[in-house]
Image (tube, rainbow, N blue to C red; front, top):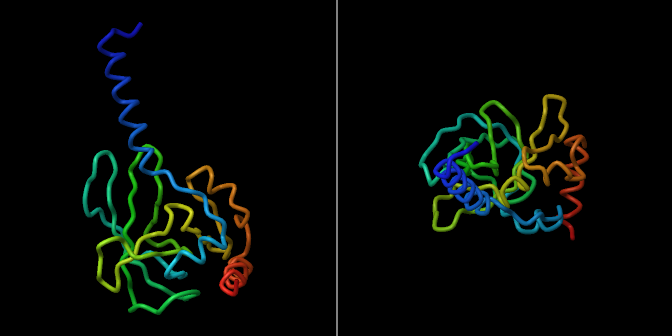
Length: 166
C-alpha cells in the first residue's frame, strides 16, 4: 500500500511528465504539407551527435549531418548542424551517428547561421533509411502509421518530387 507522501510524489511526477510530453506534441502533416513547409529536404548521414543544453527533463542536441543528396532547397556547405530535442518521456526526434536519414528541415527561430537547421515538425520530418535503402519508421507511434514506411528510398524520393510540382 502506498503512503500518502508516495502517492503525492507519484502525482507530481505524472503531472511533470504530462507537461513535458505536451511540449513534444506535433500536428501530423501530410507529405504534401511537409514538403511545402520544409526549407531543405536532404538525404545524408549523421556523423556525430552531442548534447548542447539541458532543458527541464529533455535535452537539446546537435547532430553534424553530411548531406549526400538534395531534394529541395539551396545546397549548404559540406556539413550542416541539425538541432533537435530528445530525452523526453516520449522522444520527439532521435538521430544516431552512423545512420542515414532523409530529413525535412527548417531554420530554427532566431538562428541566422546558414549551416544550422532543425527538423521540421518533430519526428514527422525524419525518415530513417536502412542499409537496404528502405524507409523505416520512427519511435513516435503516429509516425509508424505513415504510409511511406517500408517504401524504397527511390520511390519515396519520387513521391516527394511529385509534391514539389504541386
